[in-house]
Amino acid sequence: MLIVQKFGGTSVGDLDRIQNVANRVEKTVQAGNDVIVVVSAMSGETNKLVGYAEHFSKNPSAAEVDMLLSSGERVTASLLSIALNEMGHPTVAMTGRQAGIVTTARHTKARIEKINPIKMRNALAEGKIVVVAGFQGVSEEGVVTTLGRGGSDLSAVAIAGAIGAELCEIYTDVEGIYTTDPRIEPHAKKLDMISYEEMLELSSLGAKVLQNRSVEMAKKLNVNLVTRSSFCDAEGTLITKEENIMEQPLVSGIALDRNQARVSLIGVADRPGIAADIFNTLAVEEINVDVILQTVAHDGTTNIDFTVPMNEIENAKNIVKVFVDKDEILSTDFNDEIAKVSIVGVGMKSHAGVAAKAFTTMAEENINIRMISTSEIKVSMVIEEKYSELAVRSLHAAFELDK
Ligand code: ADP
Ligand code: ASP
Ligand code: MG
Image (cartoon, rainbow, N blue to C red; front, side, top):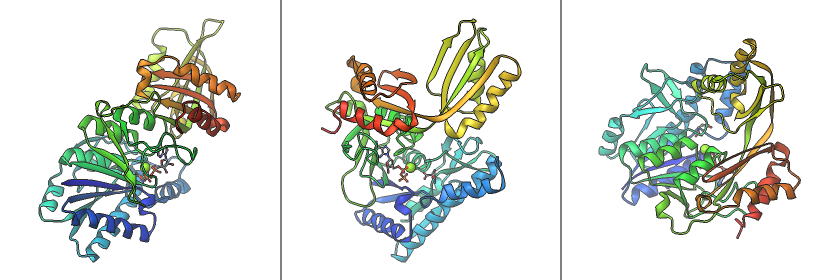
């Protein structure tokens, strides 16, 4: 069987842990499998490198940042490869480019356009273990790019899809996907299975256990995806098609996203197309706008509030300033002390009352809901950040996810 195994930052967090990963890979090989390993940088390393860049510039060139950040994953790929060699296994360590990963040129959040797996195939045919530096690729022009934070998950899934691996295992520091972040709610339960759709919502709404684009890709390419712990042998969580899951609970999980900021546009000119102009400009910059709220003021102008990821707030400010300068927006306000808490479950499609129960739960805790957005399978609420953990725990109990 051909297996892609991805090891996240904590799993390769120090030299002993890299040795532990080598032992695990060895076991998989000895069981008769071909293995492609994808690694993250050692935990904390990417943040450290970001800090180094910010020491010199508040606004460093994104191309240079990518060049810098891609080095973290190269270190672990090389070290793991050396460790495996020492155990008697032939290996080849590859950068994203060598693995054939071609991306858009959008630095720090590039998208994978295609993968040419020829070098990986040849190495496997020669009996080697392939070790790939995650989180990175190269643009058509040959410039190094990175795939957004948490992007090694995407590297692993995309490689598994491109090369037709039977299984893609994401090894991390928890035993799988839980009903909510087990670090916030110790009573969270591990799920045996979850559908791609629900996982996509959870990760898009803040559960960083899998990068959202990796789930999107797994769904599209039908990759068999398992999340499990690198520190024990417990079985993990299978992420699979909805129809493979026998019993669908009403609510599968709760996600918390503290990395959201609210943009308020006050006194927006009341003309057709203004919202399209603003949000198109944000989309061109690939800024993910989430909850949007529009209200009409007494004087005929409108107010528009929306949320963006915290690390996009400076970009968003620059964009809306253009509209202020054109007198199409009277004033703006920004608030990063907010959080978004969301409940997710495909069971909601056929049940009424989930949103009402969520709002009641917030009311009982005296938590003010600032914004709401819903879809067929989720309800998201924007609240004050200081209440975020309380909100998660009370919703977890209200929907009996600890049972
Ligand atoms: P890695 O470095 O292995 O990529 P991450 O830190 O990116 O790991 O993701 C793992 C973390 O995701 C866990 O330690 C956990 O705190 C967090 N997490 C958030 N929501 C969930 C969830 N629903 N199930 C499991 N883990 C979750
Ligand atoms: N090292 C990168 C990050 O910290 C990518 C990853 O770990 O998946 O975001
Ligand atoms: Mg991660």
